[in-house]
Each structure stands twice: as structure tokens, then as C-alpha cells.
Image (cartoon, rainbow, N blue to C red; front, side, top):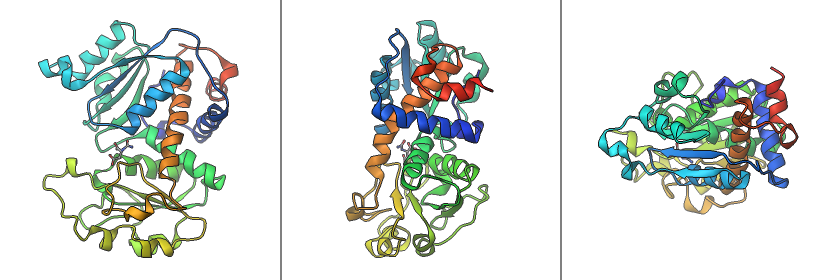
Length: 308
Ligand code: NCD
């Protein structure tokens, strides 16, 4: 039985199966019609990921166990493992976890008997964001293979950069990175290009926020937009069909000119919309894979996974 921890763990056809299932859910309501509980264990701030999980859970008819680490027994020293085991014991059927540790799932992995979905692990992984980014790109171009994609920003401290770079490469995209000095990550084996080259050659530009909370010293940002960000002048040099993605939160005027946030080629709010359907598809896939639900007519993903 697999927890949903990284897009890396999925085969290419499993990735596409989840994307197709997400697309189905956009047009066709689906409800589990069964009392199942999902617990959202967010140990780090979140607006989009947490709220879109909640919308996705409500659409599926899941009962939500909300959790606020700042008013929980975590303040009394309770560990992530003991918190997760508590939710398992009181009847949760699914855990959604976001935690500042890069490898929090090692603490749970084989010791938890209900499925766990990774909603963010330190600077390492953000697989549900990655899946919604893949869906947004796939919707736009009908393929991911052969597309030139650049991920721009604080690569060194971004879990979105890591998850997306590996998944996009797995699906055949030509992935480049672009970072201000000090924001590169030598452990990532992808070519670096400048922002000026990136805007001219790429089909997809994925912008990232500077991850100040993971820096020892606050980075100076007064000239960041002009030197490394997406200015209006650079946007004009992008290819006709090229699109802009950003996982948000956005720091307007830092990594992107504020006027570009909702420009014609921005898919930033589309990404958020897609996040609900992708998270529905991911939850249905793991619940099915764990045998917690068994409703093949409701979604395609289960058929592919069951065939393995
Ligand atoms: C991202 C995250 O939390 O990693 N946000 C998100 O989930 N949409 C990106 C970020 O915080 O910069």
C-alpha cells in the first residue's frame, strides 16, 4: 500500500490517469456516499493547499477533521507520529500532512495504517502542487512531452521546484532552471539559463516566490524584479502561446510585475481552480488503492492502478 508522497513514485500512465480523473470531476460530480473521515494536519501556513483540500473533501462527501497545530497538543510536545496515530485511532481514514521537515514521512511511513497524502515537505516535495501544475500545462498544450519549461526563482529552497523539475522531466519536458546568485541548487542536475533567455525560448515559465522563511538572513528584494523577475518588458518577449505559472502566494513586484499576475498568459488562478479537482482525484486514487472505497465507475484512475 502506498502513501502519496511524491510524483516520482508514480508511473507515467498513473500520472496521466490522475490528470484525466481530475478533468472528469470538473464536469461530473462524484460523492462517496459513505461516512469517511479525512484529517488535515497542517504544521505550516497554507491558504490554497489547505482550502482546496477542504473543498475537494466536501465535494467528495468526506467528513473533515480540522486541526490547528497552534492550539493542539503539539504545543505540549506531542510528535508528528503520535499526532498521526491519534487521528488514526479516533477513526480518520485519510491524513493530509504538511510539515516543515524535509523528510517527515520517514517518521510515519510503515507505522501508519491509513493513507497519507503529502501536502508539503520542507523544501523537498510538494506533489499535489506538482500534479495541478501538470494538469494546467496539459490542458493548455494537450501534451507535456517536448515542451520547454523553465522554473524561475529560489530553486534552492523551493519544494515546488524539486517536485516539478523531476516530474516534468519524467513526462518528457525539456526542463531548465533560472535562479539569482545564491538561489541555485547544485544537487539538481538541470541546465541553468538566464531570465532573458528563458522568456524567449520557453513554452511555460513557472515563477517561484523567494522562500524567506527558509533563509538565515532576509534577502534584499529592491532590485530583484529588474534583475531576475518577470517584468512587462520580458513578458513581451515570450512566445505567442507561452504561459505563466506560479504556485502562489505571489509577492507582487518581486518575482513578477503586479500587472502580469492576471495578464492573458497567466494561468495562476486557473492553477488554483485545478487544485481542487486534482486533489479530489488523488484522494480517490489512494482511498481506492487502499481498499477503503471500491467504486470503479466513479473514476478511471483506479482501473489503471488496479491493473498493476
Ligand atoms: C507553495 C508552498 O507552500 O510550497 N505554495 C502552495 O502550496 N501553493 C509555494 C510557496 O510557498 O512559495
